[in-house]
View 1: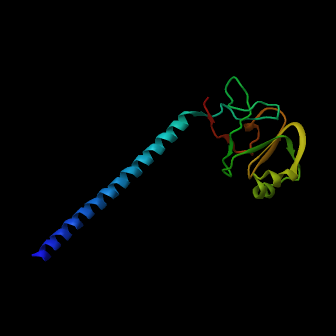
View 2 (view 1 turned 60 degrees about the vertical axis):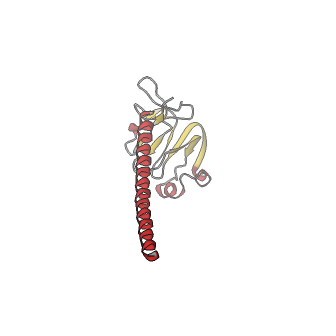
Length: 159
């Protein structure tokens, strides 16, 4: 009789444990779903809270940075390259030495200590570069003027 009760008790415990395991895995699934939904909402909100430049401009170090609109020409400080998928770095009051080349940027960007050997001090100029392209600019100019550059605005947060 004790043995039957032990067997019955063991079966009950197994049933409870298997139900708990199912409920734990169900809880995990629900948690993952909530986190995924939350990430999706946050991503959507961040897209809604950001804007792209009306036209993308590059500019010298005296040019204002920020979101370019129809009425204001500003040098975009959120540039991204669609070719190498890197953020475009910029250096005020510098220009690129003419010996700069693709391999140099591919190997050294964005480490300033490594690239400074190809930067020349020039007040009013701004040196831009990603890992595949580079440009020195003194005046504000649309990036479309340089057909070889595949730089786009990577979005500015609304303020």
